[in-house]
Amino acid sequence: MAQEAAKHPLVDVVRQSPPFDVNHVPDDSWVKDKVIVITGAASGFGAGFLRRWAAAGAVVVAADINVAKGDQLVRDVKRDTGNSRVYFIHCDVIDWQSQINLFREAVKLSPHGGIDTVVANAGIAEVKRTFEDPQDIDVTSPPPPDLSILDVNLTGVAYTTHLALWYLQRNPGSWPANPKCVPSETHRDRHLILMASIAGLMAMPGGALYNASKHAVVGLYRSLRSSSFVHGVRINLICPYFINTSLVTVTARAVLAGGSIGKVEDVVEAATRFAADPRVVGRAVTVGPKLKVKQDTDGQWSLVEGEDKDAEQRAIWEVYLHDWEDADIFQRRIIGILNRVVEIRGWTGWAHDLLAAMIYRLRSAWT
Image (cartoon, rainbow, N blue to C red; front, side, top):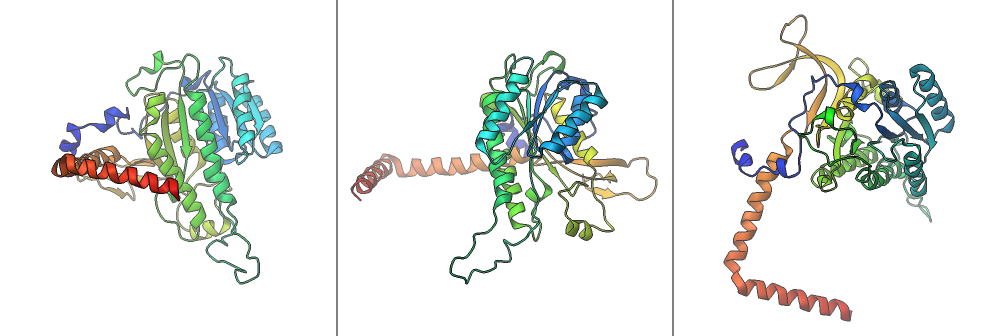
């Protein structure tokens, strides 16, 4: 299969970078002077990104709906890092105008008048699981289900992504994303990081709406990475496992009792490997608890207990590794079959379908 995919490298067309090196140590200094916008920055992953990148000298614009928490965090980061170019802007991600204001203000705060990286991080968890347990449907006016989780995790992310695609391609001094670029010669960026979840890769019972929202973000990523190169924008995705943040509910923590839970620092590490290396284009990772593992000759991983010189500590795993190779083969086979259908039907079939389309158009206009 790999040989067949190599004949028609869709990977080259969409300018995706090679498989992600999870053992690569990022050079944080590359984000110095880059302008980074982070939604949901007042806590959890967002706060971790803010602290790390501000310490590396980035110009960070932190956005969150929680003004008190966000403002205090920025004050603390300025004091701890000595970086005065860290800003807080109130933003309600489900409010379109609020997001417009965020991006416009970020451009005003930018020393060079543009934005290098956007992290669509804002999200909420599904605390009241009423969607799968409908109530009061038999009353005169049944209440609609609470879809606020879709508003924040999907609509909010879509708003952020839409604005990011407009602003990033207009970043002054930037060049189209290129996996073959030389970081030391690349001074500006056009980068979008989407934050999904392990719930976007698999079914998590009891959280239908949360799962749906995160599956949607994964779908958004997989679609955009096939077209964002047109605007020179690189897009990457992070799908955290259960990580020790406020999003992990008491119920989830009870289910995970006796098992493992990931750390925010490992998610921050994964994001930094994306943000600090402009050569990483169109890649996706999941981040979980750091485990001692070993890979066998067949490429399978197993947990290692005790000492083993060939084992390694690992929390970051790449997903959709061979996505384009498989998609390329599938698409070309399907298109080949469809082209053969056209050849068999010939001009007669083409004329018949064209006439049918015209008749359909006329009938639609009359009704």
